[in-house]
Image (tube, rainbow, N blue to C red; front, top):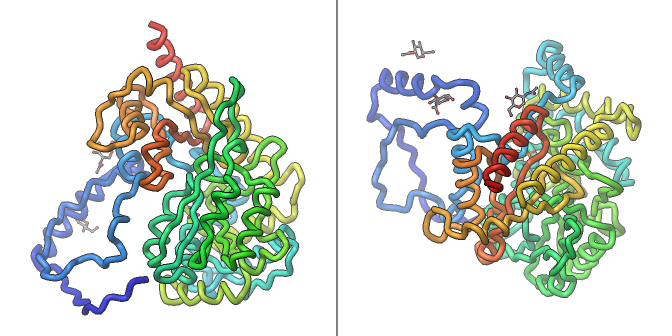
Length: 475
Ligand SMILES: Cc1ncc(COP(=O)(O)O)c(C=O)c1O
Ligand SMILES: *[C@@H]1O[C@H](CO)[C@@H](O)[C@H](O)[C@H]1NC(C)=O
Ligand SMILES: *[C@@H]1O[C@H](CO)[C@@H](O)[C@H](O)[C@H]1NC(C)=O
Ligand SMILES: *[C@@H]1O[C@H](CO)[C@@H](O)[C@H](O)[C@H]1NC(C)=O
């Protein structure tokens, strides 16, 4: 983190009378539930600005102010497009989870109060038990588990606690977009290395597994300044599930160069076909240098709960606890209770047909296959994902046919294409270039990401739009 020697003075705005304020706030809140669930809120009508002689924002925020999601989500809602962009399920979560939450709200009144700052005791206990079993480690619930506000919180703490000014952090492209600003906010320097698609693929559909790291290129990114590498398996947006050999390659480099590993495993239950998710922390010599990050939102289809966790050795986690105790200090107690009950239930049914994790990936795999086939009908070429609930589709054929779509200067083709598709075809997706560094964006502007954890009526709406599109193509 940058330390700036400036004095912070807080001045409350006194430019509006409190009655004005009330009316404006009421009117900006007069919105339907539909707007509330997505970020279509119009900007606040209050516009006071103080002209400061000093720079207003902290320098660590420079260059990270753009967020790719806001714009596309807003456009999708304005055009009432079928939302296949944002990654959240639009069907009910498992009843055992929502029941557990109702219980937590209506039961023991003490669950309305603060709990242990580093995690509600029953939750850290069951997480230690559950993941101890998977990682083949004896986890201490009080030392090896920290509960956070979503996996986002766990990631933020990892960067803030362990990445110092000037440290290099290796990010594998395409990457979940927040890794880059989080590295920079901590004062670190992102170093990028791409997963590359194979040069030719003889008509066969490509799998996300075909996108690979070049071992020599990866090795060349490790320097004496490298502090950490971030891996995300299964990977958002590609859906790649790293093989044991790929994880060993990374692990060996981490050990050789004394580098930490931040392992984002939020989609670990969503792997398809014969794929197996492997935690890099389970490889020899890796537990001691890895932070393993998970999300209840992704695990139990409850993204709005924002309960996450990070597992790791105490000598690393103690620094994340320092960030946490000086930042949020507590996460909501009732949600932690509901997540702990959900995990207790899953532990009872571990690996059995009743297990939600077992059922979910079967259901979602069918949706994956459905979407792959639907997209093929209009001439998009999906890369079949091994995991997650996303897939990327190649739009090169459209780029050839209509290379000049409207957009702002320097705007990548995929981004222009999405805006065109939302407005003209009523379908929303996310441009894959947002998952690349600015140096690489231009080269990877012909893929778009779709989310397939969507209900049957959303799929029906998608198929209707695609059939209409197909007719137009044939006309
Ligand atoms: C790879 C990855 N990591 C982390 C997160 C954030 O998870 P949470 O909602 O638990 O903060 C997401 C959410 O989309 C994600 O895709
Ligand atoms: C705004 O909200 C306050 C508090 O809920 C309420 O008392 C007031 O009547 C509301 N005003 C308008 C204009 O809706
Ligand atoms: C909320 O949504 C409704 C209908 O979808 C729309 O008419 C209204 O303008 C929206 N309000 C805001 C503040 O975006
Ligand atoms: C399906 O999703 C849409 C929005 O994505 C939602 O309006 C609808 O209620 C959902 N239907 C079911 C049956 O869950």
